[in-house]
Length: 229
Image (cartoon, rainbow, N blue to C red; front, side, top):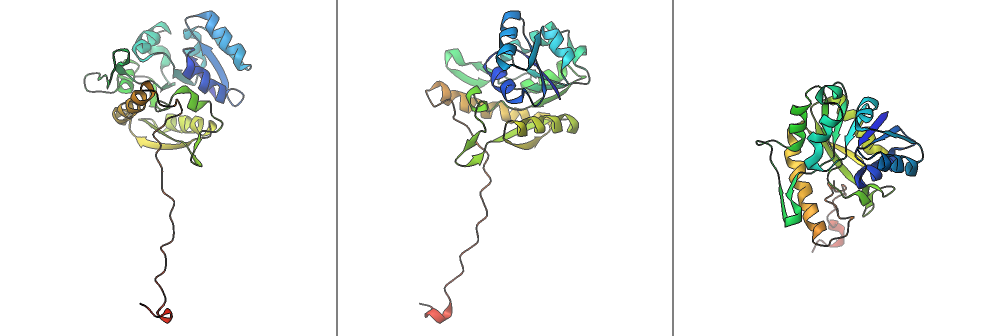
C-alpha cells in the first residue's frame, strides 16, 4: 500500500516507523528539511512537499495539528486532489489545551472528521489512531496487561476501512470498527479524556483500552455425595 503523511511531527514519526518496510511510505511537509530528515531516519521512505504527498498516497495520513488540517489540505492542492483516496484523520480538536481547556471543538455539531469529509467530499475519510500518544504507537507491539491494544476506527467507506484496519494490524493492534464516520463524535471526546490525564502528568503510555473479558467456565456446584451442607 502507498501511505503518505502530511506532517512531520511525533505522530507521523511513530506511525511511519511502524509501516516503513511493510508499505511504501512518503513523508510530506512544508519544511523540506524536516521531511528529508524524517525520511532519512526511517531509512526506506521518500519525501517531498504536501502536494507530492497527496499525489503519492493511496492512504494519506493527516498528521498536522488539528487547527492546521484545512490549511494543509488546501496547501496540498485543494479538496479535488484527494478524490478517490483514503484520508486518515488521526487528530483531536481539543479546544485550548494550553489554557487548560480540554473540551472538544465542534464543527457545527459535527466532528473534525466529518468536517474534513465535507471539505474534501471526493475522499473517503476514516478516523483512527487518535486515542493514544505517539509513544504508544512506537511500542512493538502495543500490549497492555498481556492484551493487544484495541484501536477503534470509523468511516463511511467499507473499502477505506479495510485499508485502515490492515494498517492497525500492522502495528500489532486489534482493529474494532465503531461504525459510520459520525461516530468520530465519540472518539474525539474519548481521546480528550486521555489528553487531559497526560497533561496532568500521567505516563505517556496511558490508554483507554476496549477490553473483551475472557469467557471462563462457571464452577460446578458441590456434588450431593459430598454431603451437600
